[in-house]
Each structure stands twice: as structure tokens, then as C-alpha cells.
Length: 350
Image 1: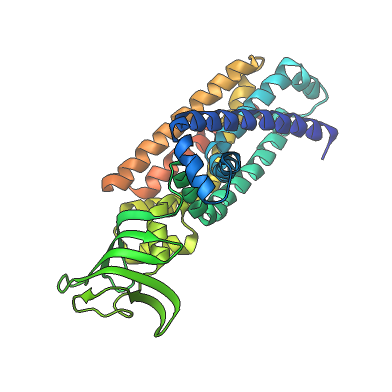
Image 2: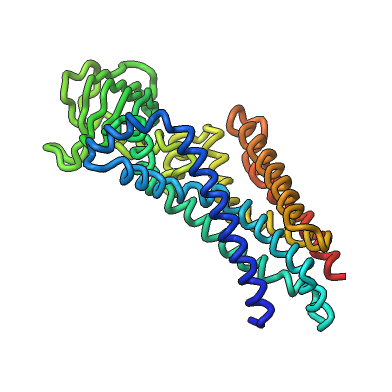
């Protein structure tokens, strides 16, 4: 690594820290002001759990920040790259390096490499860390609204490993109690209704659900169904916060659900989002030369908003009625950015 590489990387990382911090502060302030009316109810819930309001809010935002970082990370990387390149041009550092015979692409390469590495790290956070802390985040958000105990409210409908449909009105993760449970066999006949069942990992007949009230119907638990509390918690987390094996299991049980097909494609495409935006933004801003940093920022914001608007529209079409193929919806914006950016990189080498 040359002195110039270290200088460019230092400029890029310094700008990234400022940009990311600004975005996170703005998001936190917006969240805080939109929830001011809930603070009084949240105070009661926090105190019921032995926390002060300040401690509870710190815990809440400590859990929210990991969700914000992957969400805004690719845009923050693109903005930081654009502002850094703009400054290199305006301070004549780019021209000075060219005079010494260093190609433009070689000067910009450290930004692309470091940005891609950070983007890959953010994708790991999104795919592996967020699903594990999603229940804690949900609990903290409910406490802010005055609910001191976590209750997953439905109706939640899941399909167990045998193809039975299971409807649950509510579930308490702390006690393992599910209420108003209806099990509909795959054949559609002979429904089983239970007012309350409790999950017991070490029950009298082994791991499973045990009725707390009379079972009305042909099934006798345990053994009537193999759905677990994980199925309920996964259902309430949403498809965006699933681990790979959880998503694979849902796909096995629900092969025709379009939203699950989309999320399989999203998992594969996530590491490429930051790289695609950098490949487009870096050579584009460099070609424009000595533009003001604020103009570079505004242009990158426009590209980012357009990218995510197109992505969101295509994904909604794919999730809603499968009118758009899932891989097509996820990969089109990425491939378009990579293709156009590659053309600009090629021109910068001439």
C-alpha cells in the first residue's frame, strides 16, 4: 500500500464517519420525536422491568442502531466516496497524482476496495446478526409503547412440517404459552381447538406442546403437530430477519409463497448492493471533475433514492402477486449499476 493509498483511504473513512453519524443522528431524532407521545407509557413499562426511562431508551436505540446501519450503509458509502473524490479534484490532488504518471483508476481503487469490504461487513450484520437480536428489538419497541411483557399477537398462521395449518391468537415467549390455537389438518377435515397450550422442552412425554385446557377435536397433543415457538417468533419477525436455515425451512413448508422466494434472492444479492452503488458513483463523480462537494452529495442522494425506489417497487410486485420474477426484481438494479459503472470505469482507463 502506497502513501497515496493511505491518504485516500484516510480521507474516505473520515468522510464516512461524518456521513454515517449524521444519518444515524437524523434517524434517531426522527424516531424519538415521532414517539414522544409514548414516553409516559414507556416510563411505566421500563420501571416495571427495573429500568429508568433513560436506561430503557438507551437499550432501545442500542438495539435499533444495528438495524439502521445495514439499511443506510450502502448510501452512506456512496455519499462518502462522492464527497472524497470531489475534494481530491478540488484540492488538485488528483491532478498532481496524474502528473506523476499514476492512472486515475489506480487512485480511485482504494475507495472501491475499502468500500466493498465495509459493505460486505454490513451484509454479514444484516444476514447473521439482525435475526438474532430482532426479538430483543421487538420487545424494546413494545416497552416504549407501554407493554412491559412481550406478547406476540396474531392471529399468526404457520404451516408445520406435516403440512397442517396452525392458527395462534397470541403467544408469550417468556412463559411459552400459546392461546386460542386451531390446528387444521392438511386434508382440511377434523379441526382441533385448544384454548391454551404450553411449550415444554422437557415435558412428561418429551419436548413438545402440552394442553392446559381441554382439547376439542381429533388431535391429542403432544404429537398432533411439530410446529415450535420458533415458528411463531419467525412469523412475527418477518421474512427480512431470518437466518439461512430458518428461511430454508419456511421455503420447504411454503414452496409457493412469493415473499419467501424474494428473500432467498435478497440474501444472495445483499453483499452486492454497496459494491454496485460504488462502482457507479466513483467513476461518475470522477468524470465530472471539480464539482462542489455538496453537488456530489446531492447527485449521489438522487442516485441512491432512484436505486432503492426501483428496487422496492420491483420487490413489492414480486412479493404481492409474483407478477415479476423474484431474481429479476432483486438483481435488475444491481446489474444495471454494475453495467453502467463498468462502462464508466472502462472510459476512465482510456
